[in-house]
Image 1 (cartoon, one colour):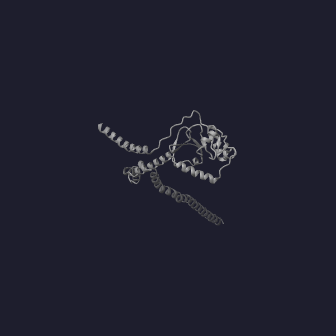
Image 2 (cartoon, helix red, strand yellow; image 1 turned 90 degrees about the vertical axis):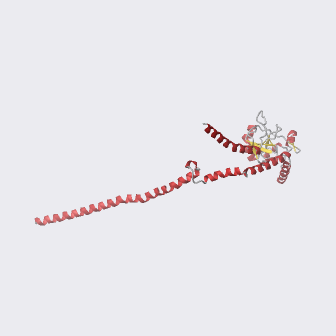
Image 3 (cartoon, helix red, strand yellow; image 1 turned 135 degrees about the vertical axis):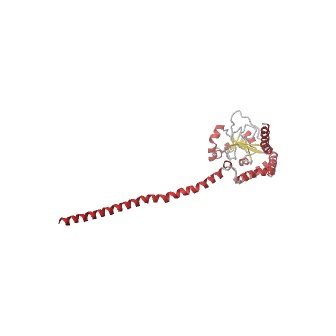
Length: 292
């Protein structure tokens, strides 16, 4: 009993130790999630001028955007997205492409109802209306062509000017302190991952499944499903070929043999009848001659 208990404890320690080391590495290189934002009611959004298909939540100090069916949120130089506005945030590795179309001073323009010197009568959109219509609005470019985002005497910027603004905002974004810290964290993360993969024990663990699959021995239940299927097909292929060959060779013989026997029996019957008729004819002639 004591030996069994000691063996189970050693086995548990052997199983837990590699898992704990891997978990430690993953935690050290992971990124935290942004703090939760408490919404008393589903948020209303407004479409932002010159940012096609982008909606923003204006009533909170936290920047939360809606674009392409996702809710987006920047925090500490990183980006997160979710299908829900208040939960389920997941780390997004890149800066979403819509962000460089957003004017950084949009909050001041929103407060003053003024968009670069033009009256901005923005429209507040309830949550349900947004989710029911955003696809059609994006497809038809509704806010740009029909509503002009509520900006009076709106004139869209030329494409060249839009590209220059995007490039300028991208450079400004990369210079933010929180973004630079995040870039350093990413470099540190890649360095730790590289060091972790180069560890001898990790390389040995990664080579074990490949070595195990190449082992010729081992019970069938421990082999891979693909190997079992391949062996099953190899065993079944000669049997299937033999079954396909047998009907082609034997069936014609079975069909021909009765026909040959029938034809031979019929010929024999005909020959017998002809002999019988000849014999009967000879006997009849002999009787007639005798009678004469």
